[in-house]
Image (tube, rainbow, N blue to C red; front, side):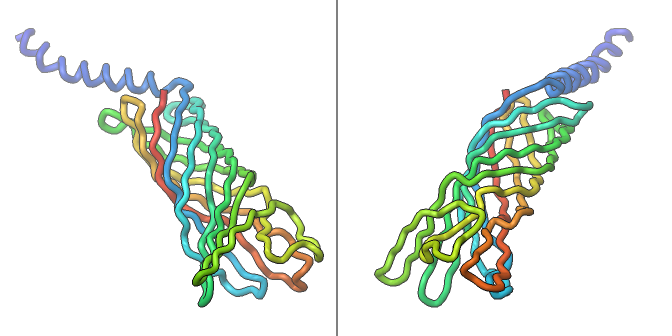
Length: 225
């Protein structure tokens, strides 16, 4: 009878032990490398107050993060990423791709709950980003024009017209969900909403009503160790 009881209880003991080991392993400071694809846009209003009708552009992100336990199942997850953003604008004559590069600092609060052999992740928090480079590529027929983006907070009256100007500082919010395996491999789906106006004050345009903000979503994969 004792032998039968032992074999009946053994699986539950092993399961509890495995869950305890996973929980203990999660409740420690860890680090990760990650990368993935971005689908980004520039939304808002043009100088006349009309809605911008831009299309998504595909980019990427890559970087690292730390995961610091703050309460059972909850973590603070700061990171540092290189991320590309932008949009595609099309009219009857030309198509212009805005390709912008940022160094980005996400500061997320993450909940992780055991699920199967791994853990489901739900995270949210602010991000701050700083523009470090960019180009606009305009094409139409046999014409192709490529210019560098200038990062500045104001556009003066005598500044060149054929240049795209962007404010260097961006900030907003992140939300993501994902799954992390016991091995440390993880995948997640991300969405991002810019809160700051990234187009500078343009003194060349009287009564300028333009408001341009970053929005986007994407997918990431990485490894935590």
